[in-house]
Image (cartoon, rainbow, N blue to C red; front, side):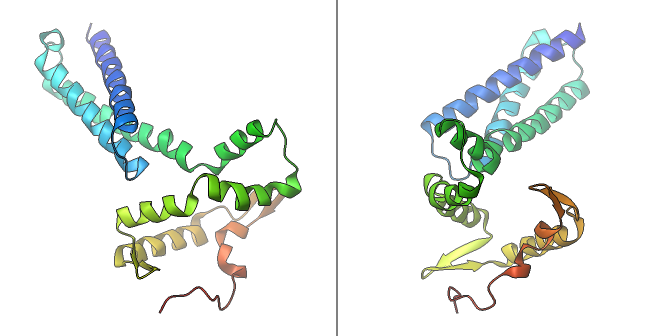
Length: 198
C-alpha cells in the first residue's frame, strides 16, 4: 500500500511540476531558462510536500519516507530542468534536426556552416541569449559596450578550461575522423584580434 501511495504522490508531483512550468513559461517573465525551471521544480516539490504532509491519505508514510520523497522530487526536478527545457533551448543538435525538417529534410553538408553563421545565430538570437545568461549568472558584466569577465567568471572559465584540456575525450569522432581538436579549440585562434577592450 505504501508503494502505491508513493507512486501516486510522485504522479502528483509530476503533474504539479508540468503545471507550474507551463504557467511560468506562458505567463511570467523568464530571465534564464535553466534557473526558472529549477525554481519551478522547487515550487512543485514544495507543493507536493505540503500535500503529502497535510493529506491524511498519505498518513501511513513515515516522516523519513516523506522526506526522502521530497529529496527524490527535487533531484527529479533538477534532472527535468537540465534535461528538457535547457537542452532544447541550447542544443545545436536539436536545431539541426528542426532546420532539416524546416528545409524539407535535407541540406548540403558543405552549406551547414552557412546555416549556423547566417541562420542559427540570428534565429536564436544566440549572442543576446548567452550574454543575458552570463550577466544574470554574474560571470560577466557589460560596461561601456565592453563585455568584461568578473572574478566569478574567471574562476569558472579556469575550471572549464582545465576540464576541457585534461578530461574531455582525446579521440573524439568528428565527421569520420578521431581527433582531439575540441580539447584545445583556441590552438588556431587569431593572435591579435581587433575586438579587445582596454
